[in-house]
Image 1: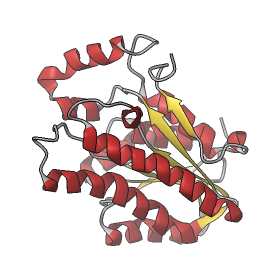
Image 2 (image 1 turned 90 degrees about the vertical axis):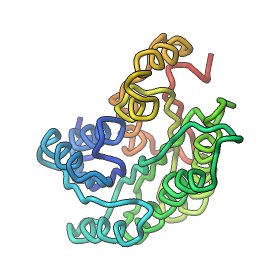
Image 3 (image 1 turned 30 degrees about the horizontal axis):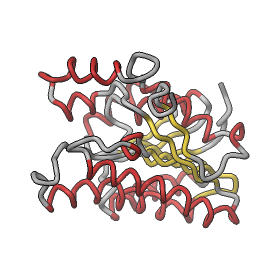
Image 4 (image 1 turned 60 degrees about the horizontal axis):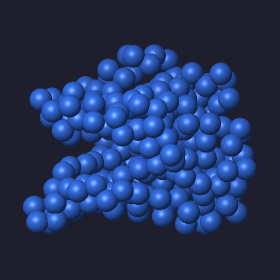
Length: 249
């Protein structure tokens, strides 16, 4: 522990019981001061109470430029710049091409693609030399899962962003990488599939993973902490799979 001592980090989607909150907790444990943001103030407050000192919650929507400006104003006021950005917040739903309407397509791309773009773009003036930007993609981008096409396409865009932004920000000594989690046991999964389908869905998901189970949020958080630290100093534009072998074996 302590690989991020004195660093400042931003984690979007940091309130819910999932990857964002687990990552915020891990980065704090590594010595960083972490700013978390999300749309649900109650969940953000709960996250602050659970994590303790070293975390600041700024409620907001990553698709709203004014909300992101408030977030980064708070980071700026701390006076130490910004060393880590974990662009994690995302939206998902199931719909086949016959079922999908334009409004739902727009919602998912607004959050996952536009929101990620704005999150990183507005962080640029604050990023210190040596900073690390980590984008949360997904193994969904590699599969043709029926009824999950829009989410998968949005995550393919995130993977592409990681490559392009790595090239663009390298001259500033800023590293950009992506992670691609497989099925992770989070409250977001339960929300997506419905409580009545939760157990069956998770059983099916675990069965298709080489390790025989779904991942835990803390396992993804450990990967983000690695990419945020100097331990990953020679990793640039990469996409690290955190999938229990789902896409590897």
